[in-house]
Length: 473
Image (tube, rainbow, N blue to C red; front, top):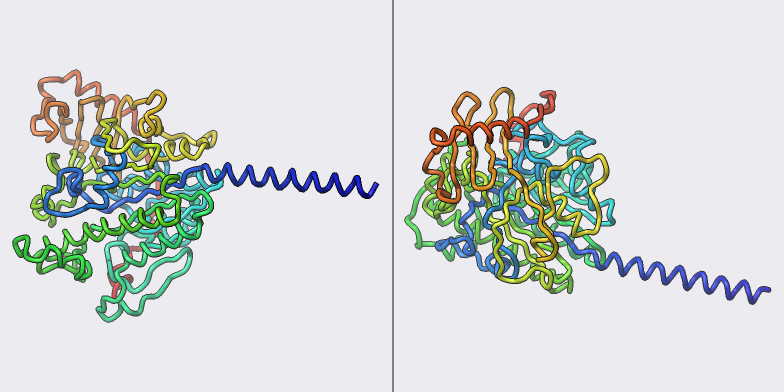
């Protein structure tokens, strides 16, 4: 009898071990997911998108190894709502955060891509600029599905490359080497090192690494080794920062090029790390930017590099130069190398695509606007397409909006201004307003914009802005 019990226990133990092994093997087949997002990088500020003055060999190699999208769009034309769209899978007519407003944030009911993947067994980490909830609110990353966070909760904090403190999860990490105007730790480098540490730590399980890096958003400053290759290659141009206390550059074009190259180097380091860990082939890596290239006081700098060419406008506008972004996907053995796609996609498509790749589904009751573009990435199955893409910027009573339907693009810069109409198939630079020639098309697209908009959340204004002294000394 004892012998029989021993045999049965041994069999059950073997079965349990076998099931565990199968489960581990199944988890190992789930791809790692990495989303690297630059800050204010223009559509054409990469070599693979036509840049000739700034060298970006590592990102160019990603495009050569994978798929380059030519009609990919950010969630909005500025950073905060664009990130909300990315996280929630809802365009700005539906997502919670629709403006650069520190009091707009995600609530508990707003489900993020990190929460979807975490429920599917993924380790999750966020490294960089968050912008969707500050300390003590339900919108901070550790409350929105991320196991680990290093970076800046508020976008104002992320304006500075030498702050005297930074968040690591729920704790403030002090950086005394950046006090008294010292430049000890370039904060992008610290964020990048924590991102690499997260990848190493989770190499044996599926992980989602969200890397919303702060480069090359101004202020204009980068360590000398990144500027050195460009020194003397451009007209020496002083580019001051008009904001008190912000760093400008005596050789601004060189500094900006160095910032983009430092970003490129760090993308290369991520790829090299994946190869060293033996997980490159099981990793879907996407690189993009949160909106178009910089305008305003930095418009001439962006234009010198033809950073948004051939598009009209810059960051902060609803024209293509504010919305269309570089978008590269690489997954060796799964995505055919050297491919280009003209599929029209937006940031709201990332959540369902990553869920699809992870073999999970968006939870019932969670409404999203996104469509998985995994069939396009893999070259398998039928790709669904959007009937339209929609954007709006809502803060108080001021709202600008735009809609793309096929090749038609409607832009309304303020609600009291007329709707402009462009045919992007013939006029990618949006130079010819065709509204007067096609009034019926204007009515159709305007009606669709109205249908795409829901009333925004009424956010209480509780956060008192923190001045520059809260972040730099």
